[in-house]
Figure 1 (tube, helix red, strand yellow):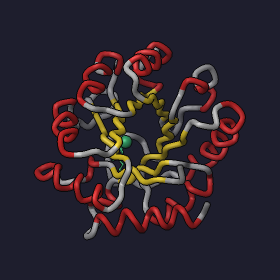
Figure 2 (tube, protein in one colour; figure 1 turned 120 degrees about the vertical axis):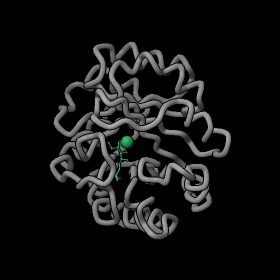
Figure 3 (tube, rainbow, N blue to C red; figure 1 turned 90 degrees about the vertical axis):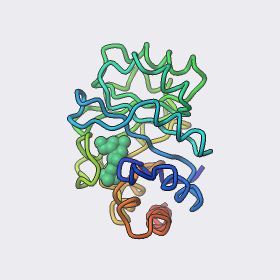
Length: 221
Ligand code: DX5
Ligand code: ZN
């Protein structure tokens, strides 16, 4: 699998969510990034499993559910039942990361763990072998449309090196402030999956925007 873009519906028009998803699916997207926020782990509130379930009926995309919620263990089953293909939890949001990883895997779906910009890679040492994906936040989580933090680039490079040794199948996803310029930087650093919200859905032509970001990322590989 080469580098891919996972458009984030956080910046889509929620009044016509199904159409927005279809738009990027028709343009060749493979993965849909779905941001879940609880007003506790992050200040913002977004959507719950009900919306995921409704979208599941109208889309064949791989559903990549990014849980920005406290105590995510309480909601894993619900999101899996709603149609998640990958569930990503924040390591900062739980005392029981290993338990959650086991819980997600037992449901037969892929598991991701996310790190905020200030959270060190060291916390992954005893779980890295278990993961399908690591999500490195390139903004402080909570809102779409924020500015990319170049400070995270060395962390992507470091993780990429570690994964080559320990778990070469594990993907590096980046999330926050990705556009055609920053896509080049993260691609060069070693990212595999680029989440893009505002740069896709707030663009006049989301299909073109998605393709432009992908092209830029691929040029750096
Ligand atoms: C932010 C979310 C992101 C967000 C990215 O906390 O996790 O997925 O939608 O949006 P952009 O690409 O606009 O920074
Ligand atoms: Zn996200």
